Length: 258
Image (cartoon, rainbow, N blue to C red; front, side, top):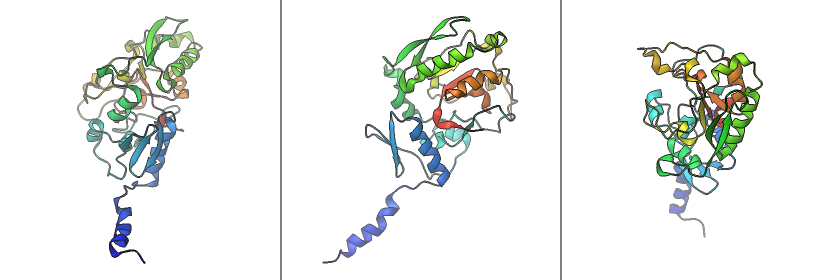
């Protein structure tokens, strides 16, 4: 006995119910997200990101790109990987609104690193000694994704840089801070203890410019410092249109070649 008319119609309709990626590029970027966090993420299934514990999160794949300000305050996972961070020496000031790393899906990072607002980060930090040969400073850093060990490798390489560069590094303005980003109200990467700020005295921050219209780019941090961080998959806020030159955060899903 052949299939009923209802069964045939259901089979024809089924593919329409499966979310589709908007493009091969979007699929590749979401694939990089999974590959960047192998201890946590399993695969992309249809329109969902599937975690190794079976949790499913909608990726937002296939949706049209929204204005930057809208994505900044409510990023989907697809938005989070929409902008690529290019490693290597900067070719010039970033294009308007090109701030790869500022688009963050809060639910994703809370699940991965814990919610500091509810004590969820407890037990996930350990102390890293920042610049022990130059000016020792104990800093709490997450052990998730081996970030603490990666930062220790950064420290070892930074200690080998010329002494004239050390003033940019010490004292650090900190790592863990359970706070929100001022212009979005969303948790900072510092809230996950996966970011570090260098010496504020030699740094620049877009909001300090108090500019109307286009933001004039400023940076005093030598790229030799950023290069060390990039080798351990930290991205630098000095490559953002909304520049934050003291800031580095662990974001392996975003880093592409120069």
